[in-house]
Length: 446
Image (tube, rainbow, N blue to C red; front, side, top):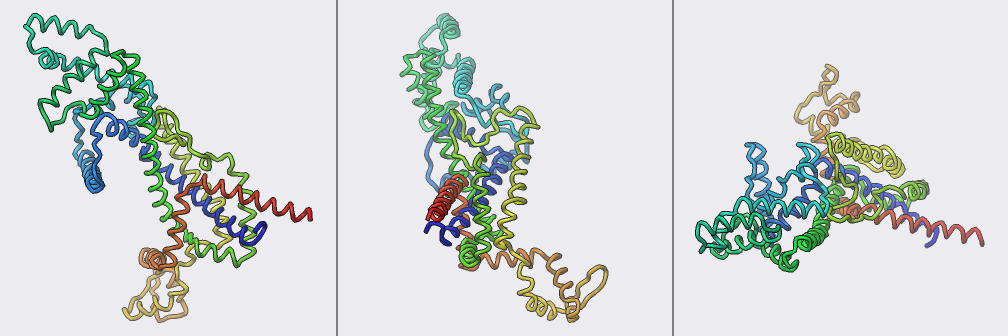
């Protein structure tokens, strides 16, 4: 198999997968930057996964909840309705430190929160809630006191340690849930139990409590990273299908062409060998390294402080897409003749013209009227039809071809390959190129 046509076909196919995986990754990163997907996933991890409703719903219920959430967001955008400050999670994200992390009004959410800042904000929010509910806390936890004793107790609680303030607040909510089963409160019931557990295990020492809180945050961020990776895989798979259809990247057809066209195979292998060295420092082909307290680490926009910073990141992603399309992808497509060609114009021309002749359609080109019976201008008429009715003829042709069983399978294989990611294909390409080089050396020695 060393230095064989089969190895060259495999290298060519892996190289194509690498190029389109890089393209899909660049497009995904552009989308992630434009729509702030990391920041939204980080907020979901903190608000939903830690500080709000942590109840696990079934698949169908989760789907309906998700659909309802998007309709709610649209409603809020249209009618400029804002969520009320009604939970620990929403209060956390309304804290000045969080707002300071936001880049601007378009990107108000941070994509990265340091672990130490999480504990600082959370404790501050709990203390603020304690201050606002101190009278209710005294009535609930110390109901038998006289007015004088209540005033004294209030003074003592205001001067007590932060750990004891949080304890009094959590005891208040614990009693609230006992008295009001089935109802919700500012601190979610499961979150309350977690906070009480960490406070108890820290022996009501605020420094130990902070350590427990930060460990909880780091553990949650590991799960959030998994959520983001799954979301990313879905996005890349969808992009993979679109890329395969738009560029006509049919795995079955490409394999067939590489196995029969030696010239194309040799040129693609040469490109692949050069690319293995050229892309070695590209961050898109490197394994993702998870950072502490961040939803996902690859090319994060964390810490951006102004409009220009995020806009520059976005432009960089757009440029990387353009560079790939105008560079290696364009060369590889030319070698393999990948694409939709004339969108079936030559193949379907007779059929198209006959159908339009039956309807007595005339075509106006450059203010001149042409009848479809005039075969002298057939090429000009077809060009006009395909350019002016591109949805019907060009898009219609692509969709019709895509629905063919063999073609659809080829696109599906391409999409699955792209979803494996650029790091996977780059690593495999390096191994195959080294194997081929080793084969050449052995042949020379003989």
